[in-house]
Amino acid sequence: MDYTRERAFELLRKHNKDEGHIKHAIAVEATMRYFADRMGGDVEKWGMAGLLHDIDWEKMQSTPERHTLEGARWLAEDGWPDDIVRAVLAHGWGMCSDTKPESDMEKVLYTIDELTGLVITAALVRPSRSVQDLEVKSVKKKWKDKAFARGVDRDLIVKGAEMIPMPLDEVIEWVIQALRLVEPELGLGESAGA
Image (cartoon, rainbow, N blue to C red; front, side, top):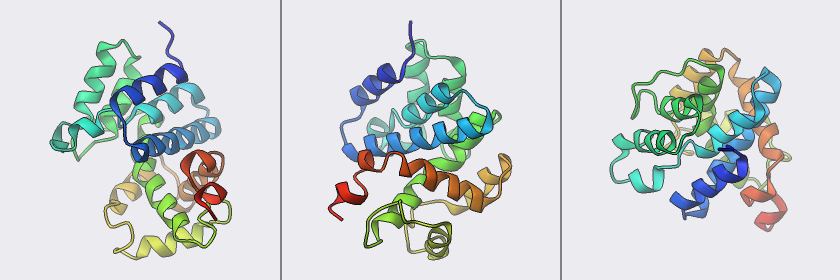
């Protein structure tokens, strides 16, 4: 069976109806593809891992401790490659999974999952509502404000950046660059009515 982006997106849509979750998946996919391209990873595979990482979130919100476990099971039963299944599990390490990120793909997914949300939220409070004019220093300023995007676990992101290993500022820069490529799909910038 072919494991394509189209098939992954169809599966994502089967289990997720909320457009916010779809946009988050697209943001993480784009970021994973960007990192893979720069780190010598399989761009398509990393992208699909990003797209599918939260496949079970809508159905597991009431039992968050089951998040990643169900999604990984669904993907394994559907015959998805083991490394994608493992990446889905590993992105929840220490929260809802005991699977520690080991491969570069797993480490990056673990690190950037919540960071994409912080970067997007930082863009949304700008007059442009865009990542096109967003800079690392602006994200770092918001980072220090614990009331801003309070659900984002900053310690987890730092821990992930250290695992990659990569300086946090560079991780943030790459996330911004990646999100610029999919800004319209995320409802940012001009598509946000700026």
